[in-house]
Length: 335
Length: 195
Image (tube, rainbow over all chains, first blue to last red; front, side, top):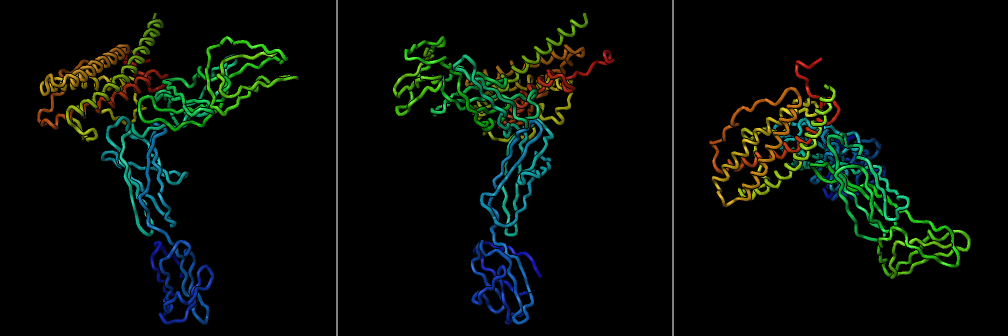
């Protein structure tokens, strides 16, 4: 006779050896290992204040014959705490999904039940195969002011708990981040970077439901971001990049009218175009480039910057600017 | 001649749609600001839920993506004509109740009323471009819900503005559908024109 027994962490557990009398001689094992008699009260096994490590297979054998009289699988766990539930529409206007998790594990199997109510109507949230703790709903109505009420109940052998979220159609709209972000230098333009991206593939109809975008960029060595909001188009040219500096760039998306901004896209790195010197001699000639708008840049005191672009050919001289010097947009030619 | 006419009609339609989309966007933004002002001035709780709002066109729609262009225009026009009457009512009541004490709310209501009228005009023009033409107006509009007490009337006003904010979003989407070359944008031909 074998079954599963669920008990709370910290509980005292008493196991009977099937139909054996209290005073019968028995041996108990846990996962095949004999259990010391000190844990027995007659033929009953007493486990005090059980913990997670005591989960396992418990078997009871008749004293002399070693016949298996009883077997149970003890699973020690906890009743569920209040689950965390969130709903989001990343494919507006098709529908939305809700996903959930438990703040702490229960260590025993849980089942989840979700109900979605819109006004007086109960809607079916279809469970996703993957990930497991997620379901999706198709919108039956659009532009409704009536709120949605979603209740998630989690149940296991030791108890149940639930949570409810209420929201309106527009509030949960949050696209996925833009995809395929690419940043490239612009030839002969030391202060420009061309950035392009695509609408997230999960957004079903960007023509009727256009997205707007937020671009942020900064040189790697600075903490402060520059921001640009773009109401249309999936490209932008940065025109105020510091010459020769590597940049980190990200883009976020939002429906033009409703909802919230997506998370930031994967970051891309790019460095604006810099002029390669032709070759070097002992006589240095310094020439200002045509784009002489000084991109004044003060590196932090400990920074030592080596202009790698200047190192070419035999007899090359590396040009190093030590800290404290203002870097202007100079082209350096060594002939 | 017919080709030139139809292409100039197409251009005019496109122009009306893009202006309409911009107007709907501005209108929504102004209605949201008006909602804040209204809630504050009328001493309401912003999160108060308003059940069914008598006589107010509801923006919620099923199978929105399956509507024809004509359906979209007609439903929008009916809605904005109704809002024109409702906002005029609210404006009058607001003046009676609060008088000059709240000119800001009155001005905000009047500004939105103007935009609603302008939008209704856009829709009428779009319908005129189809040989269908806009339906005639039915009269003065729905009667005020006179059985409501003062507080209920304030909640009713809140419901009107909220529904208008939804409509402004819907209208922009509807007009974008009209500019798409797809079944959703096709306008049902009148019986005389169907092949």
